[in-house]
Each structure stands twice: as C-alpha cells, then as structure tokens.
Length: 508
Image (cartoon, rainbow, N blue to C red; front, top):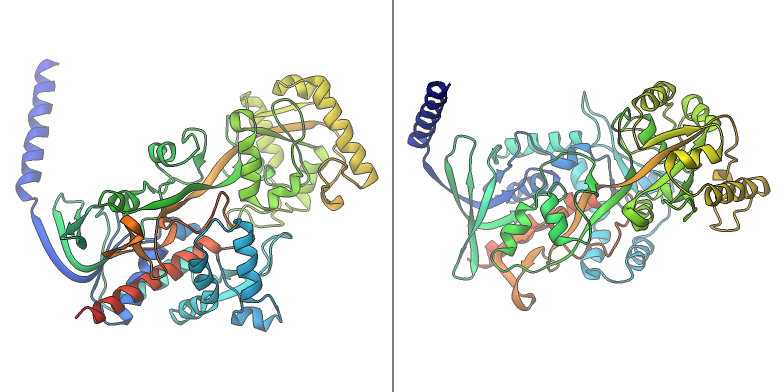
C-alpha cells in the first residue's frame, strides 16, 4: 500500500513537472480586452469591433453566455414591436416609475440614459440577426418585455449569445474560453491590460488600451454574498450553478475601485427529498392562489405578490429563519394539472403549463418523508406536520376561506380572482425558501461606464457593464421593468465599448 502511494505521488509530481515545463507566458496586444463572455462581454466585443477596434474576450467557462444563455427577454420602451401593437407607454413614464420604485437611491442619470436608448438597443440587436416580440409577462407588469424569438434549435438567450458569437468571429474578435482573468494590469494610475491563465496552464498577459469587465456578478460565491451583502450565502442559494464568483468586481476593487449596492435578485422556490428541482412542486411555490404562512402559522402578505418574484423573495426572506409555507388543496393540484399554472417560472415553466406529473411528484415527495413537503386531511393535522401553532394556523385558514367567500381580503387586500377557497380534499404545504437569479450591485460608474475610484474620479482604461455595475437598484430588483437586467447587460456592454473607442480616439 505504501509503495503504491509513493508511486502515485511520484507520478503526480512528474505530471506536474511536465505540465510546468510546457507552460509559458504568452503576451498579446489589443485595443480592448473584455473579461467575460456573456451578453455584456459579447455585446462589447461586437460593438468595439464594429468601430474598428481589435478585441480579445476572456471567458473562464468552457462555453459562452453565462446566465444570459438562460434569460428570455429584454426591457425596452418605444420600440418598433410596441409601435406595431399600438402600445403607448413612453420613455418618460417608464423612467419615472423605475426611479420612484427605487426611492431615488440609484444612479438616476445612468438609468435615464438606459431607458432613453432601450429601443435603440433592441434595434442594434435586431441588426445582429435577433428577432423580438414585445409581450406582457404578468398581470402586474407592463408590455415592455421583448422576448427573443426561437432560431433553429436555439431559444431565448442562447439565440442572442449565438448571434453575437457568430458576428464577433466574422469581425476577427479573438475569444479565449477556459481562460479566467486573474488581475488587472495597473500602472501609473491607469489600467493597461489584464492577466489570465488558460486551461493549459499558460500565463496570458494582454496589453490593452481599455479593459471592459462583464463577469456577471458574484451570485455563486457564498463567501462574497456573506461579505458583500446582508444575506447568509448558505441560505440564499443561486438558482443555477453558473460560476459567477465576483471576479471582475474583486479585481477592480483591488486597484481602488469604488462600489455600491451589492444585493441579490431574490425569488421564491423550494427543495428537499422527493422534490424535483424546478419541477411541479417548485412551480407551485410561484402560484398566486396559495395561502402563505410563516413559522408561527400566520399569513403575512398578499400571496399574489408571487407575480413579482423579487418582492415575493423579500417577503419570504423577512420571516424568521428566512422561510415560510405555501398551503394549497386538491383543487389547486387538479387545476395546475389540467388547466395549467397562472404564474410561470420564466422560460423554464411558461404560463399555462400543465403540471401533468404533479400527482406523481406529490406521491414521491411524501414517500421520501422529507421536511419541506407535507400533507394532511385537516388544517389541524397540517399544523402538526409543519410544526406551527394549530390554533394560529386554524385562525389564518378560517379567515382566508372567509375572505374568499366574501370576495374581499380584509387583511392584505388580495385581488378576488386569486382568492380561492382552500377546502377541497387533502391539504398540502410546501416550504417557501429564498433563492436568487443573480447578484445585483457592484462597481461605481459614470455615464460613460467608466469605473470610478477615489473621489469619484474615473480609473483610466477601465470600464464595466452588466451585473458588475452598482447604482442600478436599491434594495430590490426593478421587476416592473421586465427584462431590465438582460437589457442592461447588452446595452451597457455596447455603451462601454463605444466609450472606450471614443476615449482612444481623443487620447491620440
């Protein structure tokens, strides 16, 4: 055994030595170095190349796209698609609503620029071969969500990433996947490039006139969530494992960049034994007809807030121990299975999807005897199952059904069409947990997307876009403006590249 162990160590050492022997330092020169190959980075790459700049894109994953590959639609106002539908929301109205939603705690000039150019952004993307249709995604939001039309075998965000990747390659952009950036080159008070390491172990040193950060935030880093936000990263989990670990923000902070507004884009969800990830029971946590109670057994909100997933996440997060319960009955189960859900879970579960396998998942989850899904024949029995006061839950339940019968919610003014009695057959409770789609907040910027350092002065040569930018949201993602983050990613990447090119021309 000892001999085998020594042999293994010797083999590993020889492999490492061989790897190191072949590894080398590669120096590259470019006009613009882009860190991140999502919609921010690829928009920056194409926009920069269109203006004649030489561009290199670094992407640490083996694929391009990041979270944008799973996104669906982009915010815009006064677009051609809206004009075709005679939709009259103006840029001024949208701008005022967005800044009022954030209580004026945001970078208002930046938001004004974004809203004003949101339709131009859609037009530019259309020129890259991407088709859109403006739709209203939920009853609580306006018709500003520009869903990306399917193309060949691709849907939604994957269409956008594919189109930008194809255009970038046509224009000579060099894309280096499996090559994570490690640090910015900061000399004499300005950024002059970026260092990285490729999958072969080579040190990559890119000398650039400008660097654009677009690494997509820090939502997959428990450590950074704990350090940079008010949340516990072990409880507030990411929806998808996308390797977003705050690299770009950290690199900029390491050279003195200022930052603001680090937060999470929350939403409800669940998990546990027998519960399928993003499956039927998960989808039930998004439905407006449930009754929500906290761990005391008390209602605490109008459950139709589920249509506004970020605010629903807030409501759940505020409860003791950061969870709640969604209660529904056999009628709700049959309704979801035969009529379809009233509230979708984005591209993963569209509105009106029929949860045909929900009964099977319920059976599976109950058989697994997990802690996050329970059933009983009575509300008293359900109270015992979920560990809340039977007296309190009974009162909440009786009041809820009374409100449903009189078509008026005396406590939380829930709209009557979502206020349905919960008294048919068995009762079910699924645990509501707070998840997040992405982080929000990050580096402070000016209107040109230059990163700001001490005394709010721009750091020469450094730009940023997408979810690495601070100042866009206050304590909650602006869900009223459906597709805000996706649209911002593409707009800001393009804007950062145009600003960088313009600065290069004027600095000659």
